[in-house]
Image 1: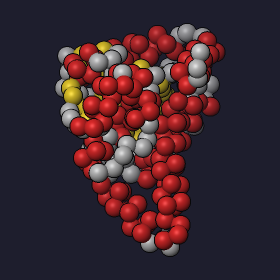
Image 2: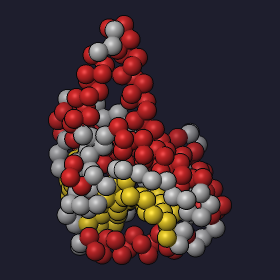
Image 3: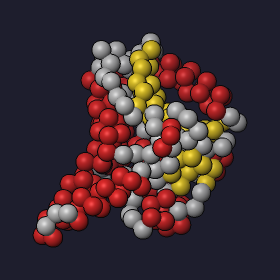
Image 4: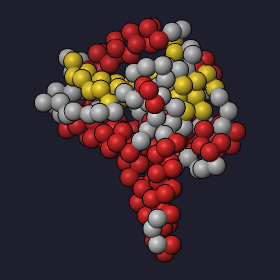
Length: 235
């Protein structure tokens, strides 16, 4: 039986697990519940033999606007409400839990593919960077937005982005918070390929995911684990 979520839509069809961000009225912004449900969804994907490939997408107009500002305010009030001597440790605990969202994608032994349309800010870049493969539409719009909120990106972008686009480009995007669109995302290797529209994006990702699902699950798992290990170690 599939787990039931309130901020995600999850379905399993012919070995393909679709994990769709589903807070369209809130621009699919990350809140505490979505964080918890994403962690559960990717752990479910990892542990479910019938699911061989995961596809991450979003309902509505936006992929995700990033972290929900109401949630940020809740975190601030929560931390300030603690005794001064434990505020730092409490904030660290909250951040460590949020980092489990992107870690759950990496630790999932199945390939995870992101299909990105429209706005993909802040947390969206964290999420996409943690996926194995990324595809987008021409109108996809990316930004490492945290700098404009006077916070340091702390869910994996600063660690994963340099390996995808290069150190200099990653620093530029993180320092400036500037927008970059689908064609540039492809040219700097943040995404594998950019498509003219969302329909072609979805068709390609569905075809690709199906082809991956037909390959040996153990081999795909071995490739992912080996490449993740090699990336994080010296030769």
